[in-house]
Amino acid sequence: MNYKKLKNFPKNFLWGASTSAYQVEGAWNEDGKGLSVIDVKENPEGTSDYKVAADHYHRYKEDIALMAEMGLKAYRFSIAWTRIYPNGTGEINKKGIEFYNNLINELLKYNIEPIVTMYHFDLPYALQQKGGWSNRETIDAFENYAKTLFENFADRVKYWLTINEQNMMILHGTAIGTVDPNMENPEKELYQQNHHMLLAQAKAIKLCHKMCPNAKIGPAPNIVSIYPASSKPEDIIAAHNWSSIRNWLYLDMAVFGRYNSIAWSYMEEKGYTPTILEGDMEILKDAKPDFIAFNYYSTETVAESKGNDLDKMSRKGDQHIVIGEPGVYAGALNPNLQETDFGWFIDPVGFRTTLREINERYNLPLLVTENGLGAYDKLEEGDIINDDYRIDYLRKHIEQAKLAITDGVNLIGYCPWSAIDLVSTHQGIRKRYGFIYVNRDEFDLKDLRRIKKKSFYWYKKVISSNGENLE
Ligand code: BG6
Image (cartoon, rainbow, N blue to C red; front, side, top):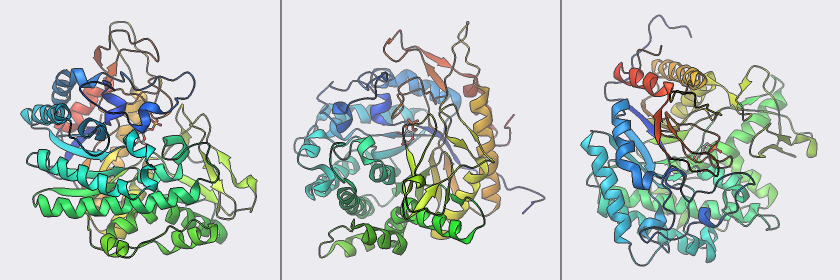
């Protein structure tokens, strides 16, 4: 549809930016923090670990002052479960509570709305040693952790996100550390873990509504539109299959409290169906999120399965992600899209499509909690970073968000990844996303000083004009 006039971004739109604890904080073993699965995970050769990251733990005041200067209305960050409960459960670490109290208070000082992710990939290692998400005790540990977060922070935090990218933890469990990479046939285990995470999420949602009537809570998966490689009906079925397995399995459960039928048939066919105990489905049905948060980077394109390994397509230059599963769908290229330096397709229109799809399916407010461009930024003489490619990427996505709002999507906020440079999940610090440059290399920590990129000044204008000035 070509509109004569586009709608404006809503008045209290949450223009924000995002990070996650392990990728930005550093201080991995300070002030009583326990080990998480990330701290013990082997990092790909040649990439940094997360021990120092951007050293935000020690520099949060300076970082928040910069966020305020950029004009952020919201900051989405995660709480490290192991700072609050070093062993996942048991004794509370007061220093951890103190750190997040200080962080939240500092944000509020500048009228920046805190948006808190409760769990972003960094499961306490002590829980992992007892089976992690395969063990139902982790559901109780999460509920107890959620209770502690609400008790301590919900007087100031209104927006809560349960679990970051649960779907990626299941689909790429060996890469993210949810299951042992040496395990034979981890998929069945992963879908059992998925069931337990869904229960943990439902319990946290229920608890949030009981304990904090003014708060809002939602899931935060990675959701993207799936295109068929052609108009061939079989390609359309393949796209539908993959979308149900990759996207809707997670959101149908979060919103409607039921397993998506196509995803369930897939699990049956593969022998992955989880054990469901009496009472589980009631718990899942009983929890309703207030909004849907989601991360969007690029769409995926798939074709009819050939039924063999030719279905599998590796994404170029990426973290060895393979798209395609024999008998279900085949990975395909999309000749209409360009790729980033890291082989991720750039698809702003797909962002609008994704927003429209989620909106139509669930009719809930939407909050974008990640979107951005990972690139090799160059620090030039005079502390200049000309990241025009990032500005271009974000501008095109914001334009599409505006179109989606005109389409009727109830979009309440946009938090690009990332507020500040941080260590990427698989490619170290060299793959940068931030508006603020952190002066360090993969292994040379240099002075870690903060430098405003060109995109910093650009985003500041976007925010101050409420999305009207994208030049
Ligand atoms: C999302 C995660 O998957 O994508 C972030 O929630 C991550 O933690 C981001 O950093 C970008 O991915 P990557 O692999 O480039 O860091």
